[in-house]
Image (cartoon, rainbow, N blue to C red; front, side):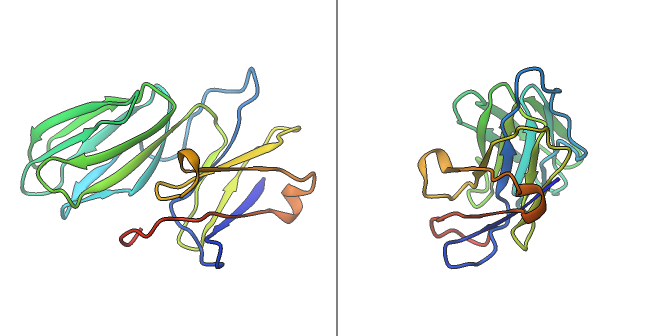
Length: 182
């Protein structure tokens, strides 16, 4: 297991960063222990960031008492779930590795992200900026950190893993653009 800590350059913990290890040829298909679900409740998407495997089907239940119109215009994962109401749900298959930025045509403040990955080694940082990648294969060499507001190209930062990463952990600083609350 490799513990990862993600912070801003000034040392503040960075939540909702996705950390991944590239999958070598022959690696198992990604399968995660969490629901592939983005709910709409109180005019908010939850979670703010979801990790989904490429080809995975993400469910979008509406728990509000009014209708939502969920969409993504992101390359490779473009979709539109036209108006649907409380207790209804729709689903979308994530077709391409990358990011699906989510919005609602009715409520502009609703924003969330689905990070679509092709590796089983993926985790999201918590409020303390910490995540743990488990069951890492021998020879893993590169860690990638993605955050929706990272200032770097493609919102990613890639770091080489030291041979003692499992014992010492990995710390990564990511510069982020100002954003509301996440």
